[in-house]
Amino acid sequence: MKESLYIVMPAYNEAQNIEAVVTSWYSVLNGKGDTSRLVVADSGKSRAFVERVVCLLLRCIFGVKVPDANAPYRLMRSDLLARYIDRLPDDYNIPNIMLTTYFSYYGEDITFRTISFKPRQGGTNSINLPRIVKIGLRALGDFRRFKKAMGKAEPR
Image (cartoon, rainbow, N blue to C red):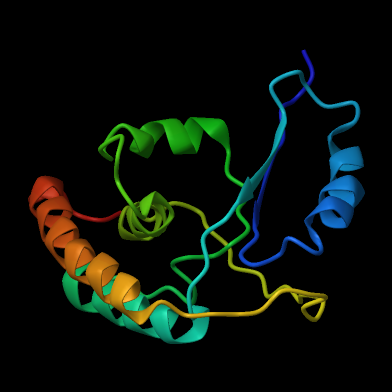
């Protein structure tokens, strides 16, 4: 049985670049299992500012210290993901952040690597501050509920 590989790529305001990027990455899936996928996610925000705030909140609420809770690229074992994915509601808005929190809180073996990005080739970077604030306020309530659901379970 061939191993499956999921490649998740953020793409916000990248209409001018997306075809070339997808074409260049799609070949990586050659020879992998039939369930392998290249997923392009169109969700952008002012990453550096939002990331600092999110990491601060996770440290205050969950006691975890991570360098990047919303890392755009992830490689996870399916058995590890299966251990935590059912704890999240189907419509949860920021599952990637909560998965990072679970992994860190429960002492899973995680590694953060610095990666570099090519400079933007086209499109424009924009910020939707009202949307970011709305997501943040909702996240605060979600974080409190998740922390309560984690109960008295001690991290590893």
